[in-house]
Length: 355
Image 1 (cartoon, rainbow, N blue to C red):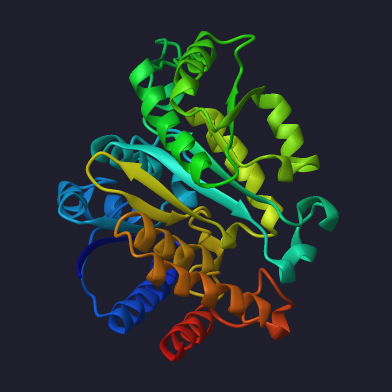
Image 2 (image 1 turned 90 degrees about the horizontal axis):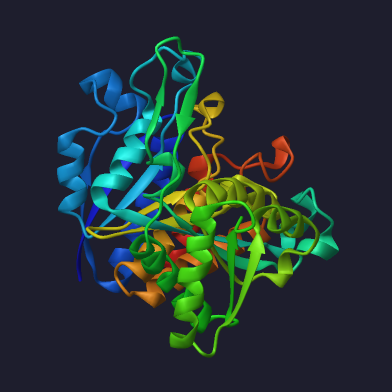
């Protein structure tokens, strides 16, 4: 199978973790008789500095012409600390989502038996957690009308949704639930927000099409609490852009490290696969960044975009074995026992090669 994959390394540790994922993809492709054509584009702070645009047209063309896109991270503290800056690295991410129609972010949260002690939550609570968030990505308050008055002492951001946006997102949630434990939770704030009432009404109208799925509706503040004290009660959760942004970061601590969790952003034109962690600029160039989330994102790519389940599984198995054998970076083990970013990638590559 010929695979065309776009590469957007981005900022901070992005290029380092992407490099390890490419290494893994190449060995998997060789093992199963596939060929991969890689095309690399600039995004984020790197693109601003070189081209004055956080998501250049050339990068967009690479994405459009790719079967899937593997993405690192964007962000640079020098932009965060200057409110007068007109262009920010994150603007490139939002623009990419909008122009590629990346309307749904699929973000799993699960645990590794050997890393349960890393979680700040009690082992008995998090053990066995296996849930998936499906977050709407191109609507809501991040893309609504916004502005300030001339005196800059008043500002507004508007949250807007239509039924089509909600329905296509919910469809993914229902379909995932059908393949799992057949439980779907719709997260909203329907006691206060009109947009949440539309979410609830729309999802309720779809229940008849998925009779085997048990649907529940919970307020976002209740879910924020239950994610900490009873995460195993959840299977598939769907929600709006802002709520999903917050809750998925909260859920990421369950596993013990943000460096472990992958994600997929499903689009109308292509899909983008990326680790949930940020650019972590403090670790840039130190060869200590955890590449596992990016490697697992590549596994999701093989399964979702290419329907290559064996290839996806061999990556997941090798990652699980690396964690079990404690071939991990300093965020998961004492510094003196830790492996470097490159060493973790090489170990997983060799494991796959010999499987």
